[in-house]
Image (cartoon, rainbow, N blue to C red):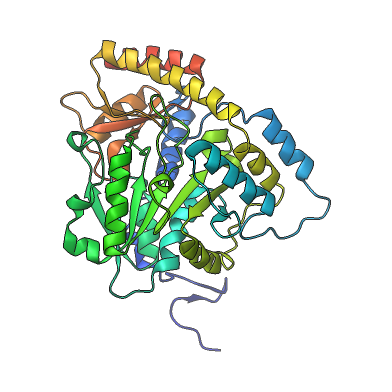
Length: 396
C-alpha cells in the first residue's frame, strides 16, 4: 500500500503530524516550565524553596485519607460521570452552610475531576450560538480560561485588571458591543493570582449584566474558604439564573492529587453540562467520592488549614515590609501578589530569586502580570523561615 511522504514505514506512524492550532496560541503550562527549571537547579545541587505552584505541603487530613482507603473496592468499575447521590447531597449541604444557598442536588450539582478539567470543558458545552463566540476573562488570570475557550473554537477576550480597580473585572470595562457577543464571562474571586476578593455589590453588577445580555457567568470559587478577613461571597448568593459556580477540594481540603470538585448553579445550564460530561470520561474514581463527600461535609479542617496559611502570609508580609517589597491585594487565596523591585521585570526578578533557590512565578505567566511575581504559600512554616533567610541573602 502506498504511503504519503509523512508516513514512517519503519515505525508505522505519521511524522510531522498536524496539530490543533490552539496549541500554538497558548503559553506553555506553568507547571511544566517550572518543573524543568527546578530539575536543572536541583541537578546543580541548589536547595530549592518552591513557591511557584499552588500545591501545599500540609498533609491531607487523616479522616479524608481513611475515607478513601475504606472505599477502595475489590472490583474496579466505571464511576458516575455526574457524582454519586451522597456526594451531591454533601455539596448541597456545604453550599447551604457556607453561603446560605439552597440547591437541588439532583438538578443543580455536578461532580468534576477537579476544577481545571471543569474550567477547560465548560465553554465547549455552550459553544452553539454563532452570534456568541466571545469568552471574557480576567488578565492576569488562570491560564485554563483561555485554553478552554480556544479549544472550543471561541474567542478569548482578556480584560486587564489593575490595582486601582481592585482587580475587579467590571462589565463596563468590557463594553456593550462585546457583551452582546459574549457566551461565557469568567469570574475568579478570590482571585488567582492576586488574592483579590470581590464585594457583593460587584457580583450583583455582573449578575445584572448576565441577565441583560444573556451570557453565562462562570464563577471560579475554588479559594472561597482561604481568606483572612470577611468571608468571600459566592455568585450563587446573588443569583442562580445564568450562573455556574466551580469549586474544588484541592486547596480547601489538601486534596490536589485526588482530583475532585463540583459545579453548581442554574439547572438549565447544569442540564447542558450533563449532556456533555457523559462523553469525555472526566469523572473522579468512585473510591475518591466518599473522601470528597466527607470533605464537603466538614468545616473544621478548612479552618485549621486557613490558620496555617494565615501564619505564613503574616510572616511574609512582615518580611516584605521590612525588605521594602509591596504585596497588592493578597486578601485571600494562598498567593501573595508582590511588586518587583525597581529596575526589574517580572521575569528578571523571578530569575534572580531562582538562582538563589527561591522559586516564584513571574506575573506574566498569568497574562498581564508584568511588574509582579506570585508567591504561593506552599512550603511548611519552618521552610518559609529558611526561605526568608535565603531571600535576604539574594537581595542583600
